[in-house]
Image (cartoon, rainbow, N blue to C red):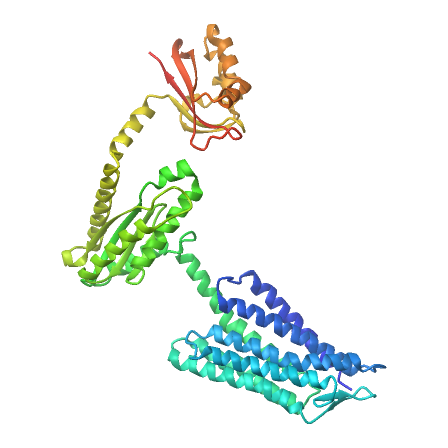
Length: 515
């Protein structure tokens, strides 16, 4: 009879590993094959401990029927090999330098699993591995050692793969030493299991090995992931502004080689894309720009996203190589096709250290920015757009209005873009709801009584909403308002915003004095 501690120990192991699995699955990187294979390995080891506990339970209590003990024993022998197989798959995914002829290794693994399964299938009909005696005893037969040989064949393959990976790594990563420890634990415990079949040495070995992976490998992977997340931009995967500033500090304290090139970049027409096609289109443009930069510059240095549409790269290459990179960069933009009707265009300014060996880093950055803005102006001028003129016109236009709001007529709320501070008080009718504000402004004496009736009628919520639903492009109302103790002519105007829809009416509201 099996000691009850056998299955109690396995239940404890399974419970602890389940907690580890649930904890690790919270942080699992689904894109990482090593992380995924560790998750599968943990589930397999948990199952092994549970079935081993079942084997210990059936072997420790009197049974009138030996079938449950027989089934449990069969599952046990099958699990020893399948768990070792998952162990090998994890080691293959863990090793950066994989051995040659991986198909051959995987074929050998499949062959061993097939041999184990064949022995157990035959044992269902003819006892060649084990049987359960009428008294409930586990009785071994001549082919039982082959079940252990199959398992140890897998461990031998794991050892060879581990040694190969460790040699190729040349000891650069100390965590590779953990491979030998977590492989050694099940192997050593497997020897004890063969000598003492009524003790749970297999589960002990797998438990120790799994915990070693968790402590020395998985936690290290998680730490590296946290460092990477803190240093990279979430949307593009490029290095973020924090990493950029750290690299600039490092370069200021070191001698910059002649091959150093600083590149300042900005995505063209991103704002108009966001305004006209929505932020999904804008995000697609940013991601496309980042991918283009990574492909062209990533092999020579680092690429950073320093702002919304602002990027830079710091690379090391010869002048001839730089010209090839520039050509590749331009072609990559021309070749890109996205989901929206928009083209990818990136303005860039390149500055080589070889231009002037005495040129300070900060001056290189400023020079690259100037060249990038010059390239940007050339881009817009080629399209007949005067960007500086646009900005001056925008300022002049905004200056002609006393009040500018972005209003949501459907939800009856607003954002203040421009407004005199003294108008933000309840005496002048100020309210948190747009239409309440307009009404209270009028009835509080700030609209001339001769214009009050038509003003209230035309600014009623139903009137304004229906006005736009009927397809009219611009809403306006003239009235006289109280300014400095006397009534002067004014005009309120509403224009649909780019994101306006009949179901969600977003408009710009303008108020100006009319002479």
